[in-house]
Length: 475
Image (cartoon, rainbow, N blue to C red):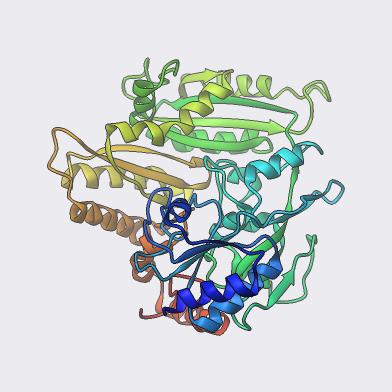
């Protein structure tokens, strides 16, 4: 009998209340990732309480079985799905919910790891609050911590790391030990900040079961515009002007290329093309201002402020602007990936560079692709305000060589080298590492860092129970 079968038998007998799925049909939804990662699990276990998580982790250590911790399975690097061996167990946190405990005065919330972002914000809205890490997907809170998600409003509110006050996690060593760091404190300077080990590390150091997050008042007013700079040099100047003149209210600044916008126009009805009247321009900025102050109070009117900014810079820094249609503008931004899927096979890159180097990076990346892979179409967009770049390319179905995975990998590797080595950037700005990016993690991480991270992982998970990835040196 395999170790995984022994583990399943033990859990079924010792913990009859634990939800264990072994039928292939029941497992199927847990075995395929949102973009990458397809495997076969021996079973899926769905604990509903931290004590059950402790029991599963302790048993996995005892029987030598590797767990794959999974939230909503919305990750894009294959980290939340099992491999093809059929021996790993998926530990789903979907049932780790319980009460969502809101503290309006402290502006914090304590929440189970399996609560979805949408569920959290629905509850917070009852108290006029929200958790502002805004994403296209609907992940669990535990998954957001493991991936350190950012999103479209990181510019104003920061990522998960900057909004995590406390965490509760189950360790692999000592087997099943509960580490309770779940405090609702903004100031706590008593040494090593242990909770950071669980942020952005893909579950390698422990299973997050609950967390306490900083939350914010819902904006009372917003103002949104899509701006097309008059040129590349003006893009930098426009960013400087936005920060200098509207920085107190600037909550989002997204970048959208001409190609990305026009792909959406081709595939969705009732979407306005911001480049229609600007033949030479090829990049736009989706700008959002927000404030908790109502427009009637103190004379603050964000739409008036934004219109004044546009009027003063129109013709010099701004060549075209679409205003007053926030839902339509955000629909344009959020529909890019869906639209370009219709154009061919996507090669998606999640990059970041310093904001000051973005124009030069974009020019070099596009030149590299045009020179070496001229059949690829570029549809770049991203979080311009924080340096995030979704450099997505499409391998067309027609008028191009037959799709070749080896060539696609070569394109990815060349652009990663350009990002990291030439522009001091990151090859994974938001999506994490996961099996999909493991080799690049090793290529671009210093040996000293690998050594220290490996030592920590060996101490906290010596049998590698909690992660498909070894973060240290070697394999």
